[in-house]
Amino acid sequence: DQQVKQNSPSLSVQEGRISILNCDYTNSMFDYFLWYKKYPAEGPTFLISISSIKDKNEDGRFTVFLNKSAKHLSLHIVPSQPGDSAVYFCAVRGAGNQFYFGTGTSLTVIP
Amino acid sequence: DAGVIQSPRHEVTEMGQEVTLRCKPISGHNSLFWYRQTMMRGLELLIYFNNNVPIDDSGMPEDRFSAKMPNASFSTLKIQPSEPRDSAVYFCASSLDRGEAFFGQGTRLTVV
Image (cartoon, rainbow over all chains, first blue to last red; front, side, top):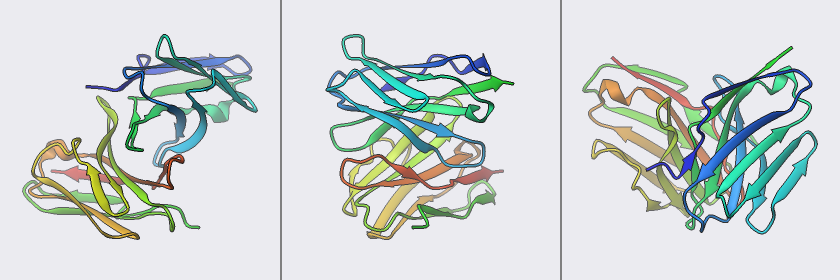
């Protein structure tokens, strides 16, 4: 069973607007949540993370929000830029330090 | 640091052949992960090592898959015999303690 779900396979946004990517997880015991970005023919790269003791973490144009009661995570990118076009993976850290990933959302930022 | 190094980058093999994928984690990292990327399941965790010991191999799809980590700087993922449905991109990643995982460039495996 998927521990992490990204229900939107793709998203298109105009340059300069906000991109919102969503993620749901199944286990309330997860304590660390991450977003990764992946370009074609490259490995995923770490983007931003949040601990379960927080509900928001911001890094420049990227902000991650955590709603523990809903078991929901979101990534906001504002303003969106064409270079942000990539596949974004949501991930959670399990009790044993392993990472479970979602199926990814392909973001296209239209110039 | 050169990051996580995987080889080969591309592998094309015939059904029934043995395939070995290789990974060199980042020096000093103590956890290593093998993932498989498919459209249906995204990044699927196959196996996780900590201090060279397999901790969780519940994601290994079948007995045809095996992984080893003989030392802190090398790991292999072997498929024997390979089947067309094994075609995917396989990623290796490493991490230090409870930090984030760093990924290699991946190996694109095609089984014909």
